Length: 484
Image 1: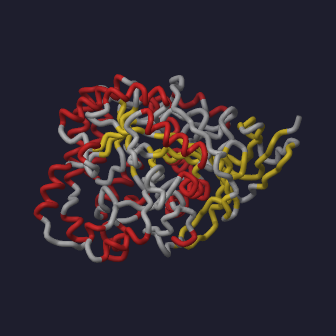
Image 2: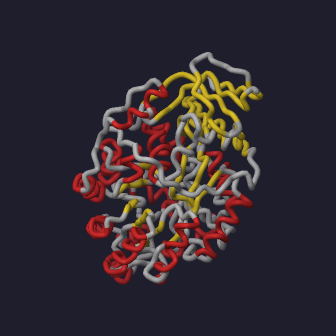
Image 3: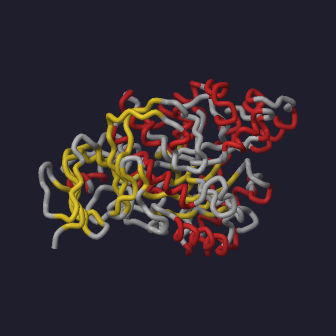
Protein backbone atom coordinates (compact mmCIF):
# COMPACT_ATOMS: atom_id res chain seq x y z
CA UNK A 1 0.00 0.00 0.00
CA UNK A 2 1.34 3.43 -0.93
CA UNK A 3 2.04 6.25 1.44
CA UNK A 4 -0.52 8.89 2.29
CA UNK A 5 1.81 11.73 1.32
CA UNK A 6 5.41 12.54 0.49
CA UNK A 7 7.14 15.89 0.98
CA UNK A 8 10.18 16.13 -1.24
CA UNK A 9 12.94 18.45 -2.34
CA UNK A 10 13.21 20.67 0.74
CA UNK A 11 15.63 21.30 3.56
CA UNK A 12 14.79 19.51 6.79
CA UNK A 13 15.40 21.64 9.87
CA UNK A 14 16.30 19.94 13.15
CA UNK A 15 17.41 21.47 16.46
CA UNK A 16 20.92 20.19 15.77
CA UNK A 17 21.32 21.03 12.07
CA UNK A 18 19.79 20.97 8.61
CA UNK A 19 19.92 18.53 5.72
CA UNK A 20 18.33 18.21 2.28
CA UNK A 21 15.58 15.66 2.01
CA UNK A 22 11.92 15.03 2.63
CA UNK A 23 9.32 13.12 4.61
CA UNK A 24 7.18 10.06 4.05
CA UNK A 25 3.78 10.27 5.74
CA UNK A 26 1.43 7.39 6.46
CA UNK A 27 -1.93 7.69 8.21
CA UNK A 28 -1.10 10.89 10.04
CA UNK A 29 2.38 9.93 11.19
CA UNK A 30 5.89 10.46 9.85
CA UNK A 31 6.85 7.11 8.39
CA UNK A 32 10.42 7.94 7.38
CA UNK A 33 12.92 10.64 6.56
CA UNK A 34 13.73 10.65 2.85
CA UNK A 35 17.02 11.26 1.10
CA UNK A 36 17.26 13.95 -1.59
CA UNK A 37 15.47 12.78 -4.73
CA UNK A 38 13.79 9.85 -2.99
CA UNK A 39 10.07 9.86 -3.93
CA UNK A 40 8.30 6.62 -3.00
CA UNK A 41 4.74 5.99 -4.29
CA UNK A 42 2.19 8.14 -2.45
CA UNK A 43 -1.33 9.49 -2.85
CA UNK A 44 0.00 13.05 -2.61
CA UNK A 45 3.40 14.48 -3.46
CA UNK A 46 4.26 17.93 -2.08
CA UNK A 47 7.14 19.73 -3.78
CA UNK A 48 9.15 21.70 -1.20
CA UNK A 49 12.00 22.77 -3.49
CA UNK A 50 13.65 25.95 -2.23
CA UNK A 51 11.71 25.73 1.02
CA UNK A 52 12.43 24.80 4.63
CA UNK A 53 10.68 21.88 6.31
CA UNK A 54 10.22 22.49 10.04
CA UNK A 55 8.45 20.38 12.63
CA UNK A 56 5.05 21.86 13.38
CA UNK A 57 5.54 24.70 15.85
CA UNK A 58 4.23 24.35 19.40
CA UNK A 59 3.05 27.45 21.27
CA UNK A 60 2.82 26.81 25.00
CA UNK A 61 1.41 30.26 25.87
CA UNK A 62 -1.77 31.06 23.93
CA UNK A 63 -4.71 33.09 25.19
CA UNK A 64 -7.69 31.88 23.16
CA UNK A 65 -10.26 33.79 25.28
CA UNK A 66 -12.59 30.80 25.05
CA UNK A 67 -14.92 30.43 26.89
CA UNK A 68 -16.25 33.75 28.07
CA UNK A 69 -14.49 36.39 25.95
CA UNK A 70 -15.10 35.12 22.46
CA UNK A 71 -15.59 38.64 21.09
CA UNK A 72 -11.76 38.81 21.32
CA UNK A 73 -10.95 35.29 20.07
CA UNK A 74 -12.25 31.76 20.21
CA UNK A 75 -10.85 28.31 19.51
CA UNK A 76 -11.80 28.52 15.82
CA UNK A 77 -10.30 31.94 15.09
CA UNK A 78 -7.28 31.45 17.36
CA UNK A 79 -6.34 28.09 15.90
CA UNK A 80 -6.88 29.45 12.39
CA UNK A 81 -4.27 32.07 13.28
CA UNK A 82 -2.07 29.29 14.63
CA UNK A 83 -2.32 27.32 11.38
CA UNK A 84 -1.49 30.42 9.35
CA UNK A 85 1.54 31.01 11.55
CA UNK A 86 2.91 27.45 11.31
CA UNK A 87 1.77 26.36 14.76
CA UNK A 88 0.30 22.87 14.76
CA UNK A 89 -0.35 22.81 18.50
CA UNK A 90 -1.25 25.47 21.05
CA UNK A 91 -1.62 25.39 24.82
CA UNK A 92 -4.63 27.41 25.94
CA UNK A 93 -4.16 29.64 28.97
CA UNK A 94 -6.64 29.51 31.88
CA UNK A 95 -7.66 33.16 32.41
CA UNK A 96 -10.99 32.50 30.76
CA UNK A 97 -14.53 33.13 32.01
CA UNK A 98 -14.91 31.07 34.08
CA UNK A 99 -11.23 30.64 34.91
CA UNK A 100 -9.91 27.09 34.80
CA UNK A 101 -9.78 26.22 38.48
CA UNK A 102 -11.53 22.86 38.73
CA UNK A 103 -12.46 19.81 36.64
CA UNK A 104 -15.75 21.32 35.44
CA UNK A 105 -14.14 24.46 34.01
CA UNK A 106 -11.34 22.37 32.51
CA UNK A 107 -13.80 20.07 30.76
CA UNK A 108 -15.79 23.05 29.50
CA UNK A 109 -12.68 24.51 27.85
CA UNK A 110 -11.49 21.16 26.51
CA UNK A 111 -14.92 20.45 25.03
CA UNK A 112 -14.96 23.86 23.32
CA UNK A 113 -11.60 23.05 21.77
CA UNK A 114 -12.65 19.63 20.58
CA UNK A 115 -15.59 21.20 18.73
CA UNK A 116 -13.82 24.23 17.29
CA UNK A 117 -10.03 23.79 17.08
CA UNK A 118 -8.33 23.51 13.71
CA UNK A 119 -4.93 22.51 15.13
CA UNK A 120 -4.19 20.29 18.11
CA UNK A 121 -4.30 21.81 21.57
CA UNK A 122 -3.80 21.32 25.26
CA UNK A 123 -5.13 23.28 28.24
CA UNK A 124 -3.48 24.74 31.33
CA UNK A 125 -5.11 25.27 34.73
CA UNK A 126 -4.73 27.92 37.39
CA UNK A 127 -3.21 27.07 40.75
CA UNK A 128 -4.08 29.38 43.63
CA UNK A 129 -4.12 29.02 47.41
CA UNK A 130 -7.89 28.49 47.09
CA UNK A 131 -8.01 25.48 44.75
CA UNK A 132 -5.15 23.28 45.94
CA UNK A 133 -7.51 20.36 46.55
CA UNK A 134 -8.39 20.36 42.82
CA UNK A 135 -4.87 20.05 41.41
CA UNK A 136 -4.62 16.25 41.49
CA UNK A 137 -7.89 15.90 39.58
CA UNK A 138 -6.81 18.55 37.06
CA UNK A 139 -3.52 16.73 36.54
CA UNK A 140 -5.42 13.49 35.88
CA UNK A 141 -7.55 15.29 33.28
CA UNK A 142 -4.38 16.30 31.43
CA UNK A 143 -3.56 19.87 32.48
CA UNK A 144 -0.43 20.87 30.58
CA UNK A 145 0.76 23.10 33.42
CA UNK A 146 -0.48 24.92 36.49
CA UNK A 147 -0.24 28.68 36.15
CA UNK A 148 0.88 30.64 39.21
CA UNK A 149 0.15 34.37 38.98
CA UNK A 150 2.07 36.70 41.27
CA UNK A 151 0.49 39.83 39.80
CA UNK A 152 -1.91 41.30 37.24
CA UNK A 153 -4.93 39.17 38.00
CA UNK A 154 -8.03 39.45 40.18
CA UNK A 155 -7.17 38.96 43.88
CA UNK A 156 -8.90 35.59 44.05
CA UNK A 157 -6.57 34.24 41.35
CA UNK A 158 -3.32 35.58 42.77
CA UNK A 159 -0.59 33.92 44.78
CA UNK A 160 0.72 37.14 46.24
CA UNK A 161 2.64 36.34 49.42
CA UNK A 162 5.63 34.04 49.67
CA UNK A 163 3.56 31.75 51.89
CA UNK A 164 0.90 31.56 49.16
CA UNK A 165 3.46 30.80 46.46
CA UNK A 166 5.20 28.19 48.60
CA UNK A 167 1.97 26.31 49.33
CA UNK A 168 0.92 26.42 45.69
CA UNK A 169 4.29 25.17 44.42
CA UNK A 170 4.31 22.33 46.95
CA UNK A 171 0.83 21.28 45.81
CA UNK A 172 1.86 21.36 42.15
CA UNK A 173 4.91 19.23 42.94
CA UNK A 174 2.72 16.75 44.83
CA UNK A 175 0.41 16.50 41.81
CA UNK A 176 3.41 15.84 39.55
CA UNK A 177 2.71 19.01 37.59
CA UNK A 178 4.70 21.77 35.94
CA UNK A 179 4.38 25.24 37.47
CA UNK A 180 4.10 28.04 34.91
CA UNK A 181 5.03 31.15 36.87
CA UNK A 182 4.36 34.77 35.94
CA UNK A 183 6.82 36.67 38.13
CA UNK A 184 6.10 40.32 38.90
CA UNK A 185 6.35 42.02 42.31
CA UNK A 186 2.70 43.00 42.73
CA UNK A 187 3.12 45.05 45.91
CA UNK A 188 5.67 47.36 44.29
CA UNK A 189 3.55 47.79 41.16
CA UNK A 190 0.47 48.53 43.28
CA UNK A 191 2.36 51.13 45.30
CA UNK A 192 3.67 52.87 42.22
CA UNK A 193 0.23 52.81 40.62
CA UNK A 194 -1.36 54.38 43.70
CA UNK A 195 1.09 57.28 43.51
CA UNK A 196 0.85 57.75 39.74
CA UNK A 197 -1.23 60.69 38.53
CA UNK A 198 -0.48 60.49 34.81
CA UNK A 199 -2.64 58.81 32.16
CA UNK A 200 -0.16 58.42 29.31
CA UNK A 201 2.27 55.74 28.18
CA UNK A 202 5.09 57.22 30.24
CA UNK A 203 2.92 56.85 33.34
CA UNK A 204 2.34 53.18 32.53
CA UNK A 205 6.09 52.59 32.22
CA UNK A 206 6.76 54.36 35.53
CA UNK A 207 4.57 51.79 37.29
CA UNK A 208 6.40 48.90 35.59
CA UNK A 209 10.12 49.33 36.26
CA UNK A 210 12.36 46.44 35.30
CA UNK A 211 13.48 45.75 38.87
CA UNK A 212 9.99 44.49 39.82
CA UNK A 213 10.52 41.44 37.62
CA UNK A 214 14.00 40.82 38.99
CA UNK A 215 12.68 40.98 42.57
CA UNK A 216 9.90 38.52 41.84
CA UNK A 217 12.19 36.12 39.98
CA UNK A 218 14.65 36.08 42.89
CA UNK A 219 11.82 35.20 45.28
CA UNK A 220 10.43 32.51 43.00
CA UNK A 221 13.85 30.93 42.52
CA UNK A 222 14.30 30.44 46.26
CA UNK A 223 10.84 28.89 46.52
CA UNK A 224 11.50 26.60 43.54
CA UNK A 225 14.69 25.51 45.25
CA UNK A 226 12.85 24.82 48.51
CA UNK A 227 9.83 23.04 47.05
CA UNK A 228 11.69 21.11 44.34
CA UNK A 229 8.87 21.75 41.90
CA UNK A 230 9.47 21.74 38.15
CA UNK A 231 8.98 25.37 37.16
CA UNK A 232 8.70 27.24 33.89
CA UNK A 233 9.30 30.99 34.17
CA UNK A 234 6.90 32.79 31.85
CA UNK A 235 7.50 35.83 29.60
CA UNK A 236 10.85 36.95 31.04
CA UNK A 237 11.61 40.48 29.83
CA UNK A 238 14.72 41.82 31.60
CA UNK A 239 18.44 41.25 31.41
CA UNK A 240 18.68 41.16 35.22
CA UNK A 241 16.19 38.29 35.39
CA UNK A 242 18.06 36.38 32.67
CA UNK A 243 21.31 36.72 34.62
CA UNK A 244 19.64 35.49 37.83
CA UNK A 245 18.12 32.57 35.99
CA UNK A 246 21.46 31.66 34.45
CA UNK A 247 23.02 31.49 37.91
CA UNK A 248 20.07 29.49 39.21
CA UNK A 249 20.33 26.93 36.43
CA UNK A 250 23.97 26.39 37.29
CA UNK A 251 23.04 25.97 40.94
CA UNK A 252 20.36 23.45 40.01
CA UNK A 253 23.11 21.51 38.18
CA UNK A 254 21.39 21.58 34.81
CA UNK A 255 24.26 20.93 32.37
CA UNK A 256 24.73 23.43 29.59
CA UNK A 257 25.73 20.90 26.94
CA UNK A 258 25.44 17.22 26.47
CA UNK A 259 26.45 14.13 24.59
CA UNK A 260 23.30 12.13 25.30
CA UNK A 261 21.48 13.87 22.43
CA UNK A 262 23.32 11.58 20.01
CA UNK A 263 20.54 9.00 20.32
CA UNK A 264 18.52 11.16 17.93
CA UNK A 265 21.21 12.44 15.63
CA UNK A 266 22.01 9.22 13.73
CA UNK A 267 18.43 9.05 12.46
CA UNK A 268 19.17 12.20 10.47
CA UNK A 269 22.84 11.53 9.85
CA UNK A 270 23.75 14.60 11.88
CA UNK A 271 26.04 15.57 14.70
CA UNK A 272 24.51 17.39 17.71
CA UNK A 273 25.12 21.11 17.86
CA UNK A 274 27.57 22.28 20.48
CA UNK A 275 25.79 23.53 23.59
CA UNK A 276 22.46 21.89 22.74
CA UNK A 277 20.58 20.90 25.87
CA UNK A 278 19.21 17.37 25.71
CA UNK A 279 15.59 16.37 25.50
CA UNK A 280 15.75 14.65 28.86
CA UNK A 281 17.24 17.75 30.45
CA UNK A 282 14.48 19.94 29.02
CA UNK A 283 11.77 17.53 30.12
CA UNK A 284 13.08 16.87 33.62
CA UNK A 285 14.77 20.18 34.42
CA UNK A 286 13.87 21.95 37.63
CA UNK A 287 13.75 25.23 35.77
CA UNK A 288 13.11 26.46 32.22
CA UNK A 289 12.74 29.95 30.81
CA UNK A 290 10.42 31.50 28.22
CA UNK A 291 10.62 34.76 26.30
CA UNK A 292 8.09 36.32 23.93
CA UNK A 293 8.60 37.76 20.42
CA UNK A 294 7.35 41.23 21.34
CA UNK A 295 10.10 41.61 23.94
CA UNK A 296 12.70 40.33 21.47
CA UNK A 297 11.72 42.67 18.64
CA UNK A 298 10.17 45.74 20.30
CA UNK A 299 11.37 48.11 23.03
CA UNK A 300 9.90 50.95 25.05
CA UNK A 301 11.20 53.27 22.33
CA UNK A 302 8.45 51.87 20.09
CA UNK A 303 5.64 52.87 22.44
CA UNK A 304 5.13 56.44 21.15
CA UNK A 305 4.50 54.97 17.69
CA UNK A 306 2.40 52.06 18.91
CA UNK A 307 0.29 53.82 21.50
CA UNK A 308 -2.05 51.42 23.34
CA UNK A 309 -1.29 48.71 20.79
CA UNK A 310 2.12 48.35 22.44
CA UNK A 311 0.80 47.71 25.94
CA UNK A 312 1.89 44.28 27.15
CA UNK A 313 2.71 42.58 30.44
CA UNK A 314 5.51 42.65 31.35
CA UNK A 315 5.97 46.07 29.80
CA UNK A 316 8.24 46.65 26.84
CA UNK A 317 11.75 47.31 28.14
CA UNK A 318 14.81 49.25 27.07
CA UNK A 319 17.44 48.23 24.56
CA UNK A 320 19.81 46.84 27.21
CA UNK A 321 17.13 44.49 28.54
CA UNK A 322 16.32 43.35 25.01
CA UNK A 323 19.99 42.60 24.40
CA UNK A 324 19.97 40.61 27.63
CA UNK A 325 17.19 38.40 26.27
CA UNK A 326 19.10 37.73 23.07
CA UNK A 327 22.20 36.93 25.14
CA UNK A 328 20.07 34.49 27.13
CA UNK A 329 19.07 32.72 23.93
CA UNK A 330 22.68 32.57 22.78
CA UNK A 331 24.04 31.14 26.04
CA UNK A 332 21.18 28.67 26.63
CA UNK A 333 19.53 30.36 29.59
CA UNK A 334 16.38 30.91 27.54
CA UNK A 335 14.88 27.55 26.61
CA UNK A 336 12.01 28.49 24.33
CA UNK A 337 10.03 31.21 22.65
CA UNK A 338 6.26 31.32 23.25
CA UNK A 339 3.98 33.88 21.67
CA UNK A 340 1.83 35.01 24.64
CA UNK A 341 -0.81 35.51 21.95
CA UNK A 342 -3.24 37.80 23.79
CA UNK A 343 -5.80 39.32 21.41
CA UNK A 344 -8.10 42.24 22.16
CA UNK A 345 -10.46 44.12 19.88
CA UNK A 346 -9.39 47.32 18.23
CA UNK A 347 -12.09 49.18 20.17
CA UNK A 348 -10.70 47.91 23.47
CA UNK A 349 -7.19 49.02 22.57
CA UNK A 350 -8.35 52.40 21.29
CA UNK A 351 -9.85 53.14 24.70
CA UNK A 352 -6.28 53.73 25.85
CA UNK A 353 -5.92 56.85 23.70
CA UNK A 354 -7.51 59.03 26.37
CA UNK A 355 -6.21 57.11 29.39
CA UNK A 356 -3.66 54.33 29.24
CA UNK A 357 -5.37 52.65 32.19
CA UNK A 358 -8.48 51.96 30.09
CA UNK A 359 -6.70 49.76 27.54
CA UNK A 360 -6.10 46.03 28.12
CA UNK A 361 -2.56 44.69 27.85
CA UNK A 362 -1.62 42.04 25.32
CA UNK A 363 -1.00 41.61 21.60
CA UNK A 364 -1.64 38.87 19.02
CA UNK A 365 1.45 36.85 18.16
CA UNK A 366 0.70 33.55 16.46
CA UNK A 367 0.96 34.79 12.87
CA UNK A 368 4.09 36.91 13.23
CA UNK A 369 6.34 34.73 15.41
CA UNK A 370 7.85 32.55 12.68
CA UNK A 371 8.37 35.39 10.15
CA UNK A 372 10.05 37.43 12.89
CA UNK A 373 12.36 34.54 13.76
CA UNK A 374 13.18 33.84 10.11
CA UNK A 375 13.99 37.51 9.70
CA UNK A 376 16.30 37.16 12.72
CA UNK A 377 18.00 34.27 10.91
CA UNK A 378 18.62 36.55 7.94
CA UNK A 379 20.12 39.13 10.31
CA UNK A 380 22.40 36.56 11.96
CA UNK A 381 20.66 36.67 15.34
CA UNK A 382 19.46 33.07 15.10
CA UNK A 383 20.31 29.95 13.12
CA UNK A 384 17.67 27.79 11.47
CA UNK A 385 18.24 25.02 14.04
CA UNK A 386 17.60 27.58 16.78
CA UNK A 387 14.17 28.27 15.29
CA UNK A 388 13.27 24.57 15.34
CA UNK A 389 14.56 24.23 18.89
CA UNK A 390 12.98 27.36 20.38
CA UNK A 391 9.58 27.13 18.67
CA UNK A 392 8.99 23.38 18.38
CA UNK A 393 11.37 20.91 19.98
CA UNK A 394 11.97 22.51 23.40
CA UNK A 395 8.32 23.51 24.02
CA UNK A 396 7.18 19.99 23.16
CA UNK A 397 9.79 18.39 25.40
CA UNK A 398 9.20 20.67 28.36
CA UNK A 399 5.42 20.35 28.37
CA UNK A 400 5.34 16.61 27.80
CA UNK A 401 4.15 16.35 24.18
CA UNK A 402 7.30 14.74 22.77
CA UNK A 403 7.84 12.48 20.85
CA UNK A 404 4.38 12.97 19.38
CA UNK A 405 4.84 16.69 18.74
CA UNK A 406 7.63 19.08 17.82
CA UNK A 407 9.94 16.70 15.97
CA UNK A 408 10.65 15.47 12.44
CA UNK A 409 11.17 11.88 13.51
CA UNK A 410 9.64 8.57 12.41
CA UNK A 411 6.60 7.80 14.53
CA UNK A 412 5.84 11.42 15.38
CA UNK A 413 2.61 13.02 14.28
CA UNK A 414 2.92 14.39 10.75
CA UNK A 415 2.85 17.97 12.00
CA UNK A 416 4.87 19.96 9.49
CA UNK A 417 5.32 23.56 8.43
CA UNK A 418 6.89 24.37 5.08
CA UNK A 419 8.36 27.87 4.97
CA UNK A 420 9.76 29.99 2.17
CA UNK A 421 12.86 31.71 3.60
CA UNK A 422 12.94 34.24 0.76
CA UNK A 423 9.32 35.34 0.82
CA UNK A 424 8.95 39.03 1.65
CA UNK A 425 5.81 39.96 3.56
CA UNK A 426 4.40 43.23 4.80
CA UNK A 427 2.55 42.72 8.07
CA UNK A 428 -1.03 44.00 8.00
CA UNK A 429 -3.41 43.54 10.90
CA UNK A 430 -6.43 43.40 8.62
CA UNK A 431 -4.94 40.36 6.88
CA UNK A 432 -4.54 38.36 10.09
CA UNK A 433 -6.78 35.41 10.83
CA UNK A 434 -6.97 36.32 14.52
CA UNK A 435 -10.16 38.08 15.47
CA UNK A 436 -8.03 40.94 16.86
CA UNK A 437 -7.08 42.19 13.36
CA UNK A 438 -4.30 44.36 14.79
CA UNK A 439 -0.61 43.90 15.56
CA UNK A 440 2.27 45.94 16.99
CA UNK A 441 4.25 44.92 13.90
CA UNK A 442 1.90 46.74 11.53
CA UNK A 443 3.74 47.73 8.34
CA UNK A 444 6.91 45.78 9.13
CA UNK A 445 8.67 44.07 6.25
CA UNK A 446 9.67 40.53 7.22
CA UNK A 447 11.65 37.89 5.36
CA UNK A 448 10.40 34.32 5.47
CA UNK A 449 6.91 32.94 5.96
CA UNK A 450 5.00 29.66 6.21
CA UNK A 451 3.42 28.52 2.95
CA UNK A 452 1.92 25.23 4.15
CA UNK A 453 0.94 23.84 7.54
CA UNK A 454 0.03 20.21 8.09
CA UNK A 455 -1.53 18.68 11.23
CA UNK A 456 -1.45 14.90 11.51
CA UNK A 457 -1.01 14.59 7.77
CA UNK A 458 -3.81 16.96 6.77
CA UNK A 459 -3.08 20.36 5.22
CA UNK A 460 -4.76 23.03 7.36
CA UNK A 461 -3.15 26.10 5.77
CA UNK A 462 -1.75 26.70 2.29
CA UNK A 463 -0.65 29.87 0.54
CA UNK A 464 -2.62 32.35 2.57
CA UNK A 465 -5.75 30.27 3.04
CA UNK A 466 -6.79 28.30 6.11
CA UNK A 467 -8.08 25.00 4.75
CA UNK A 468 -8.54 23.13 8.02
CA UNK A 469 -11.97 22.68 9.50
CA UNK A 470 -13.05 23.31 13.10
CA UNK A 471 -13.06 20.02 14.96
CA UNK A 472 -9.96 18.61 13.27
CA UNK A 473 -7.82 19.65 16.22
CA UNK A 474 -7.53 17.14 19.03
CA UNK A 475 -6.84 17.53 22.73
CA UNK A 476 -3.35 16.31 23.66
CA UNK A 477 -2.46 15.57 27.26
CA UNK A 478 1.15 15.65 28.47
CA UNK A 479 2.89 12.33 28.93
CA UNK A 480 6.02 11.27 30.72
CA UNK A 481 8.71 10.49 28.18
CA UNK A 482 11.62 8.23 28.90
CA UNK A 483 14.84 10.09 29.79
CA UNK A 484 17.50 10.21 27.15
